[in-house]
Length: 527
Image (cartoon, rainbow, N blue to C red; front, top):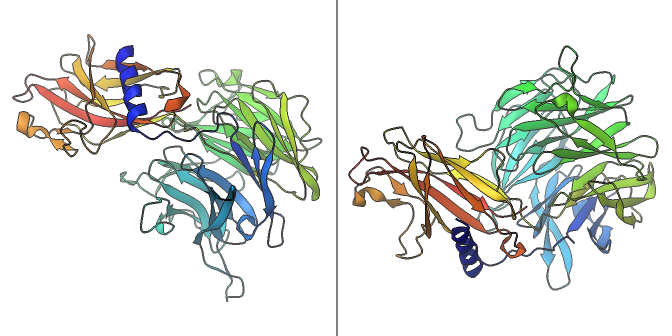
């Protein structure tokens, strides 16, 4: 099996163009929202602390969020008062990031009534190349709006879709899942239906609709604001961070179960509460084992939350010692989750601000970078120069004796370098299947046949070959489910490469050929 997987890696390296990675010196973008017309921004090298670009710009004025896209080659920024999403591209000639307008929403304060479609936050759907923002003409009419982020599309930057689900409730903070299929859109304050989960999968019958809503109990903090949220990469949990003057907390929603996790052994559901000051920002590790949070109060603070999902009451909150981060509003994890960057201001409304980069395990400071002439820096975004390992399914299989065979990544398994990636193959009448792996879902490498390819020609009516079959592996098990595993080399040169899988199940009664086909999967190698 290992030789087979190495052959795939070698084939990928010889056929695909390598993804540019910065190997631990990714840029961290810091945006501000202070007033005026040209708020300051900065691009900082994470390893060296060198500020490669800093200055005021109308395209980084009143930044409310930022997200990297296309393997760190682009940066999208949402602008509140400017009512638009801007985009920055790397200029290889001058060595700087050049901003321009990606999409301008209606903005006319002088109109009657005034039109001001403030943009709160921006997220990028890496699977479908779509950009999402939360915008609307008033605080209680904001909706999620989807923009075309496909660089090769003739409608690049135009509106594709939008929700119609949130009228009447004030929303500002929200987040998108890594696959782009779910969004968490909490209200500004905990209360009735403060938490909503929205289906953003275009193939789903509930597309653009709210599929879950709940009241968030902010125990023991009095008045609180919801300041951040995240969704785990496996779409198992949604995390909502709220901050109050007495204490802050983290509410965690179990998406499949439709319930909140209970972090205490006392009767009734209780969130994870931490009396450290007002929590303002958070980021979640790829494997969802921990989160980093930051907040204001006193000298400011940052902390690490280690989760125990089996026994949530065993989860721990550990404040990082030795950090001086007053008014810490923004925090972001590095792509490999080993470091964190937190932006803070020395005193409220008074520059300079500072970007502190520290070890996410120990809190040891690695770099402290003064950001002169900047304050109110609550946007930090770490360049995703090395893609996150992901795997998703596509296409349809054909029915056999036990129904349609299916493939899917095993629970908590991702194609991360240096790990063993596992795919479950289900509904096998004899417990036997052939797993086909390749580098394309468009054309076969040998005959050059277009995919999907109709297999009725070989006696498999209703079945299609969906991926290039460069490598064939036999998988078997005593029951109806078998597994295909790949010990992925820990080789940085294959970051970002894609691979494709499809299983063919032995089923003698299904058709003349004696096999049926599953759906297909596509994976991206990364952290």
